[in-house]
Amino acid sequence: MSIFNRLLLCLFLVSFTAFSQKAQKSAFEVVPLGIKGGIDEKNLSAYLLAPANTKDYVCLDAGTVNAGIEKAIENKIFKVSTSEVLRKYIKGYLISHAHLDHVSGLIINSPADSSKTVYATHKCMEMMENHYFNDQTWANFGDKGVGFPLKKYHFQTLQTGEETPITNTSMTVKAFPLSHVNPFESTAFLVKSNDDYALYLGDTGPDTVEKSENLKSLWTAVAPLIKNKQLKGIFIEVSFPNEQPDQFLFGHLTPKYLMQELHILEDLAGKDALKGFKIIVTHLKPPTKNITKIKEQLKAQNDLGLKLIYPEQGKRFEL
Image: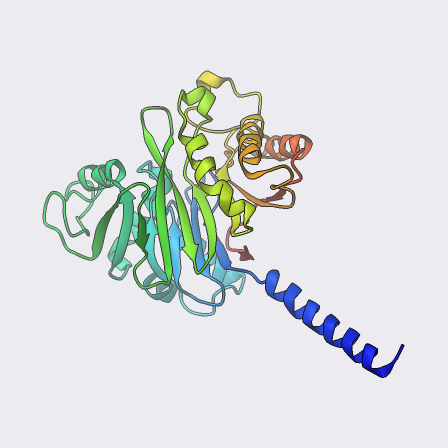
């Protein structure tokens, strides 16, 4: 091989390596503050999400906040105080629905928090205002609602399907409705950073049980992003093992129903579109034997080649 050809080969290899590294570059950083679906009040649904290499986090639900931050500090994810993470790193909250295991951390920590925005759809925000921040069960730290608004939090109502900037970040969010014991509503949040996306689902039952097409509509909306490799991962709940009867799902998924829904998504996105795709499994309900069974069943039924991620409280990962 001539020197010229060797130089061309070297140039090609360097360019290919650089392209591959760029293609594999992470878009988001995730710090789980809480991962379970009950009964551990120190470890309930809450996930910090930020564009890679920033500290501009939005909190996806807020069941546990303070205990999760402390766990992350123990794991050396954050090298500042709990108060500084709460007040400076968390730029806002996306609340999927108003059940206590998704909002209790936000409520309890509100006196120590800094001014920021709480985002939710109309029904969820209405419940937050009327039942929590109402000057009876808790002081009204919001800027509207009943009682005396202290105006620490700006309560911003999201219109489903509309892209909304997340204040003090470079991210935007689009909300989609979910069924959680129909007609009770939950929410999915499609978060965008540059041309990359992450999808977070609050509690949801399968369309077949909920007599709904909310998940089908969501899958239809995000399928093009999977085709284009723009969607970096989906946070989705699996609360019970397959043995849980439909009438006792209470608006949640099992491994069987998760795979059923993801097969619908693959049909829309294209064959093998989900191979290696990151599914972050959330909201696993204790006891431990149930969690173990859920993981075993998901492994056995994973015929799509998904990369299943089981987040751990206070341990960062990337998307």
